[in-house]
Amino acid sequence: MLSVVLVFLFLCISPLQAEPLRVTVVLSEEGGAYQEFSDLLRVKMPVARFALNTVNVDQILSDSDLYIAVGMKAADELASSDLPVLSVLVPKAGYDKLPHGSVQRTLPRSAIFLDQPMERQIAFLLAALPSTSDVGILYSIPPPELPNVRRLLADKKVRLHDISVGGAQSLNDALESVLSESEVLFVLPDTGVYNAATIRNILLTSYRKQIPLVGISRAYVRAGALCAIYSTPDQVASQAAAAIRQFSETGRLPPNQYPKEFEVSVNRQVARSLDIPIKDADRLRDEIGRNP
Image (cartoon, rainbow, N blue to C red):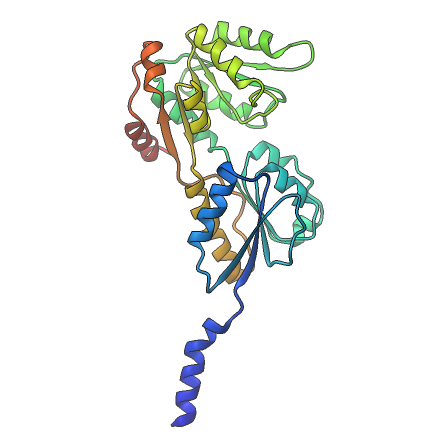
């Protein structure tokens, strides 16, 4: 009887004695959304099962079972390493350009993208501005999803006006050209066009011409975009936590994926200034959620 009791106790307590999965979170930079993601991820991972360590991309990495690259700089730094990596808060176009050597075919590698699936973005655009017939897009390099954007808009009888920035075509010239043909400027995650040095001028120029800008983050809305669809660090952290739990149980990461949850923001002041009727954020989110 004593031996049976001992076996029972061993089975009960042995899971608690297993070593926690070591996870190192590598931040592209300190503070902001990256730090917020890291802090929220830590809350979502039980300390008995997971040991999380957060470092800056420039610091020496400690030995871990899994690495979380937060942002493109960290993803780029770890891309050629012989390590299992989950990249988060990275644009799909940027992640797809990272070196995909033989190491990535043998070690677990996955990503949770920063951008929304294109079907969701177009659904949001047309829910926010249902009378739109001409949409403008700027890009530094033709994005792979451009044919899909064109098809999705054409299915709704909407014309796409896309212009490449660079070479002989300066940003100002391209912006003036696309705004002259469009009723809305639709932002794609392209740092060659939209960055800290350019976004203010793009917003002011489009606002002056009474053309709304549909952005890709809450920061765009605060800066003067009409509206935006995005996923919060908390939502991405929940999705990353699920991927880490899967890795701990199976040794595998889920396939590359877009954010599952999302939020919507609307700048009511810009809507009034441009005399644009628009649904509130909750209604838009519910509408997109019913038609992903």
